[in-house]
Image (cartoon, rainbow over all chains, first blue to last red; front, side):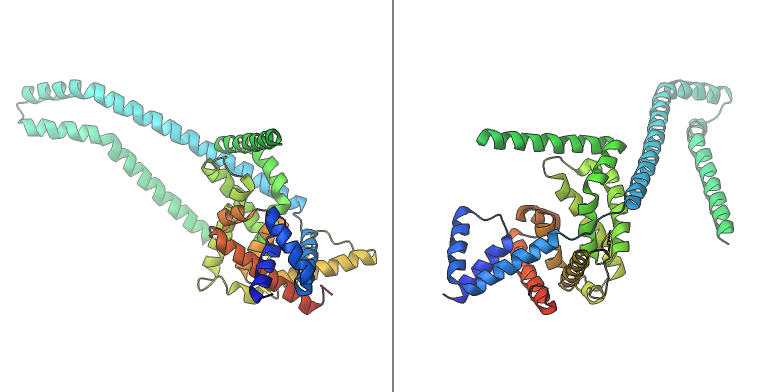
Length: 158
Length: 199
């Protein structure tokens, strides 16, 4: 009996109850012949039984706290999702209205430019500025809000 | 026999598919149910992986938050527990990497001194005391073996995962899982022998 046989037997013992019929038969016959491997298998069975009977368990307080946290987070995610949906609808509406009104605005600005005898690039820049105005105003408002929040949080921390 | 096996396979698939659908919807009732169903198994795994009950409880909560947030990534084709353990494992390793950037194996040095109180120790009859002692011995022996071996031993023998499932959870090849199991059990037995628990 070489050392490799013992190693193989112990590797099979370590795999537990998932051996094929042939592996089980070989291991059984090896254990009958080898006292050391038989003792090893018994010790392994005892250790596994002891491991499975470990009384480590989660407390009900932990479970309840986890369930509460998960529900709160689910609610937050739902609100975020709803906000995102509203923003998406707004973006779509803005894009659609831009597409529909750009042609009319272009003609209107061209007419006003002619009436005021302005060169083409001047009224065209005016049109672009008008188009960008909502985005510029929104950016300024968001920056102001961010600065306000940073100041408020900073003063609260102090 | 084949019909029975087919029935149970279908049953398992329909159950995992239902879980996957519920997770995609972020169904809070389903999550409540899953938390209750896997509470002990997940916490035990985390305790043995991290070697610290408090940390394990924190990661337990974070794991379920992650399950809620990334639930859509669960495909429903595999056991839910395998995916859950993988999520918990990644969170634990992330935490340990932040805490101990040098080496995960270095975790063991402090763990030998960590104490893990059983959840509900009721010291009354001497049998209970004996069980308590045995539990402490096996916990101490487990905590004294390297984390990758310990994790494999716990997943196989305590949580009852197959070798393939352990390979999925740990991201290690099947051969590595087998050798970790062998080495882990061998180390566990030698440590238990040292404490006289196996005598």
